[in-house]
Image (cartoon, rainbow, N blue to C red; front, side, top):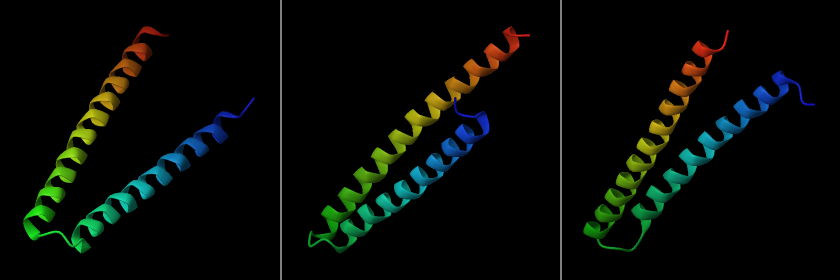
Length: 80
């Protein structure tokens, strides 16, 4: 079996890499919008839609994480 420390380190590293690639990917999307040949009002519309989509995704992930933490705390209280 895999040791708990090794699994925790691998999990932490994968989360950090996901953060880096997500930030880089979103930055590249904004850069693509910036350098596109579309008119400025269309660029603003695209950037606004991207920002709104990112906000909705963040809220969904935050809600899921908050519910998971509440569930873990409830399990800790019931277990000796």
